[in-house]
Amino acid sequence: MTALGAVAATTAIAATLATAATAGGPTTIGRAQGELFGPLASNARYIVYAQPSGDDDEPVPIEELDLRTHRKTTLVAAGLPALGVGATPGWAAFVAPYGNGQALFAVRHGTTRRVVLSTSIVSPVTSDGDRLAWAEERGGRQRVLVRTMTTRHTWVAADFPRCTAGSCYRIDYVTLSDAGVTFDRGAIGTQPSFVLRRRFDGPLESTAVPGDPQPDLVPSSAGAFYFVLDRGWFRWDFTSRRPTSTDAPQPPRGQVLAVDARGVLVQTGTSCHAKLVFMSKGRTRAFLPPRAPGGSGEVCAHVTGFSIEAHRLVVGWGLLPKVSLQTHSDAGVLGILAVQPL
Image 1 (cartoon, helix red, strand yellow):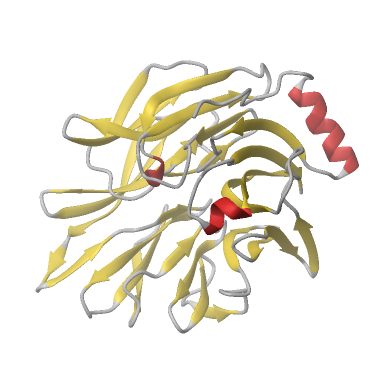
Image 2 (spheres, helix red, strand yellow; image 1 turned 30 degrees about the vertical axis):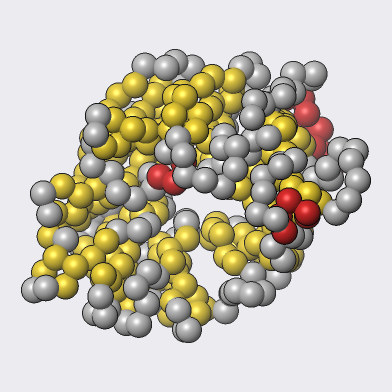
């Protein structure tokens, strides 16, 4: 389906953001009938997002929205949303088909000229400040890379064989914080998995995770924050020597999405009635999905992407008639891109 006015251009976005910050409510800055917003990444001026028409893994457009000029630019017509997007102050990043495989590209904001960063990426790209990070695999070896975009310096945080003594691993997640990079080595087999971290000025460290082939790492500004099957959430900040179990909502009560210096972002609710909760210093703030304009019948909402910045939360919401959800159809889906002050 085609987007019907994916970005509203009625008033200056900067002005609406300022109004929302004063009023404390969300501001809708994008709406697309038949298409969604997410995954997404953002900085003070730009939002980079994939725009799929449903939940499939087919190549989809990767877009960039300039919040100052309201201009929307298609960075690539056929990107791979499962491998994420990134946004630094100067660059957008995305993954797209390349030759017989796929490649990680970077594009200067406001342009469409691509730079190839990797032709063997295997994990979703992530961004934090001026850095991008990802994992790649080539010739039976896996590497975790961190690229500082202003200096063009690429740091190899880890490099090891995919298989050792008959035990093989994959890298599912890479996360960044101000102090360093964290990632997992998910076990392909019955051996323990691992969560690893490395400070930008320190050695590689690891902790074993037995009984879980895919420990779920979520973005954390402090270090590693991950969920272990049947054991719950663990926190391994760069200021702590070893991981410790931590009390956080877990399925089915909720799913931690990210840990910020100010609090924890959690998705709660049901498959039809999702909402976001930001827990900070004993305070809890709930962010409800926007209402579907017009129409009749029950509408379900789910989160399709998010990004936490210094003073705001950017969220992609997908609204779908409940009857479509029950019949596993995308008919009637509406994507909304919203900004919520924190």
